[in-house]
Every structure is written in structure tokens, then in C-alpha cells.
Amino acid sequence: MSFPTIPSITPSISINRTQVINLLLASIALEELGLAHIINAEGEKLQAVLGTLPGLSVKATSISGLLSVNREVRRTLQTIIKNQMLLQFKLEDIMDIFSTPTRPPSPPIFVDAGSAWGVGIEYGTGNAQYFTFESTDTEKTVVLGLGATNIPVGTVHLLRQGTNLLVTFTTDFPYVMNQVHLYVGATAPVNSNPGSFPYKYPPAPDGYFTTYTFTVDVSGIPGTIYVAAHAHILQQV
Image (cartoon, rainbow, N blue to C red):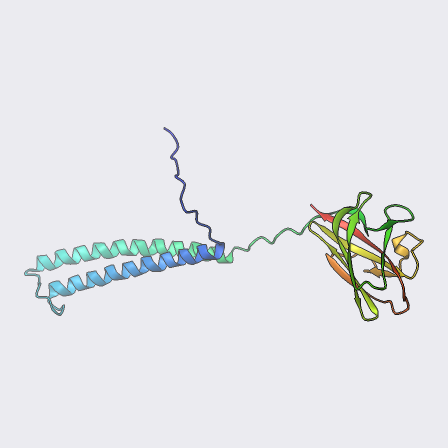
């Protein structure tokens, strides 16, 4: 004997958890409505044989006839009661769905991916780089490159706003940052250790983020601005 084959259903139906619960509750309500109509019909049947139903002249002619109708009504009501019990069980099972706690999503897992720099001119040791922002520039974006091959993991965006320079670090999924360092000066940086840069966020790595903006006063730098932007990168796995 082979297993039964379940045919494919077209069109496919896609509903969420809340919609499923609402449909189950609606099915109980519709079944209850149907049972209510049956009970009403049985009541009218008794009224008819007793001669109390307006508009009908049907009436039982003997006690045995009345008892026979009464027996049939009782059997129907017993069947309805059985269905009511099943609907009660069904309702209780649905209510259990509400009380069942949903499992919270697992927190993301990150691994250390290394250092990323705003791609430009290499200097010092490692993958240290700097780039320039000219006095005529109002906006500039460079790649935030990871490792020796400058794998693109995000961007460093510069925007001149009055006497301030807004430097925004941004990473793309699946990369995040847990610390960023920034050098902004009138001369090219010499020290390639990002820990020595004048701007840092946060003071110590704590959690992670995907974007951060430094606001730097550059009113004292009339010409070319030299920028070194470093981020410590984590990768989601």
C-alpha cells in the first residue's frame, strides 16, 4: 500500500500567525452560527406539532406522535451538544496559541574582521591611509576599505558645513563597527597608530554600530585638509 499523494494547491496561500488565529476563531463562530440555526429549527418543529407556530396548521394527532417528535428533537440536541464540546476544545486550543510565548530572535553573532581605512594614500605601517579634502571641496565620499586589499565595507563621507567638517563613517551589511578613529589636520598624518588620533568614538569598544558622524571645526585650516579615517570592523556570521 503506497502513501497518499497530496496534490499541489494553486494558487499558493501565504498567511502569517495572526491571520491563522483569526481564521480559526472565525471558523468556530461560523460553526456556532450554524448550530444556532439548527436549534431554532428544532424549536419550531416542536411548536408546529403543538400547534403554536403562527402560520402553520400542522399538529400531532396523538400522544405517541408527540413523543416520537420529542425523541427526534432530543437526539438532534444531543448531537449539537457533542459538537459544542468539540468547539469548546478547539477554542481552548486556539487560546493556548495566545499564551504560548514566542521565541525571541537570537542575537546576531559577529567576528573580528580587522581594520578598515578611508582609501587614499598609504603611509606608515599596516594598511594606514589618508586622503585630502581641498579648500574648494564641499562634499566628498571615499571607500572604507578593509585589510590590505581594501575590501569595500562601507564609506567615509565628508561634508563642509560652515566652519565645520562633518565626517560620517558608514558600513554596509554584513559589516559593523565597534570603534572609529579620525585625524583631521593641515598636514599629512605621520603616526599610523589610530589610537593616537585626536578623535575617537566610543572611548572604549562597547557594542556595535553602522554609522557615526564626527563634527570637526576646520576654521583654522584655510587650505588642503588631510584626513585619516579608521574603523575597527566586525562581520556578522
